[in-house]
Image (cartoon, rainbow, N blue to C red):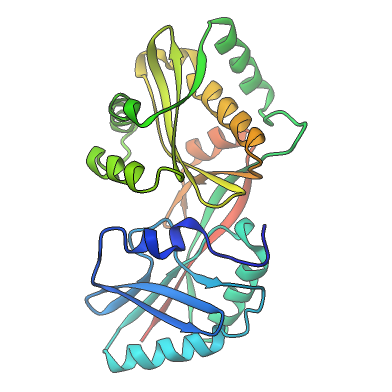
Length: 289
């Protein structure tokens, strides 16, 4: 990862202030800053984002202690009872992750959750690292004539109906509605991407992905047709996204966490393992005041 700037899309002011919130506060010192959502008597970095955490314009992380002192002083003045910092996966920026963990623990924070993010490494000249069973499914997808496509915004409604069908079937919450997705695609056309798998003209699998940085693509919101799961179109979907990442020089595909507040979803975890993923720790810290 780029050591000169630790800024990721979810930490940019454009994303943080996308809905013009009035409850965002920030603390900064020289080359570093951290944003928080103020919720009654708590600070969360960040509440409505996959993660928050510190942002630095270079590899000097020494201002963390000064920022934390400012944070403590402000929290005491405003009668804050708890501070939560939701960090990005360690693999995103290992050096900053280590510095953050060390300084937070020394400043009274405790690890609230240890989540597991699963990552696929994208390597030039190397095909997607599926296991043997997943490769057999890929061959079947191709034999059945399934086609992978990068889609435009105009296919979003059709894709969203698949996402809803799939999430309802699996008992997963619908965390983002269609109108909010449309707004995100319109506001951030370079960051929000849509992919799909088709049998003839019918979309049977889809994924909304987000460009976190020039090197990281986040596999964010996916779904498949219940009636076509025997074909495993998600296998071809991930294979196609891997190819897109190769062409566009991404290095990592973030498949998201396979835990909820530290508790493992073993079925989801094993599925992502079959796609050739490795684990990366994603920590949430809390300080009681």
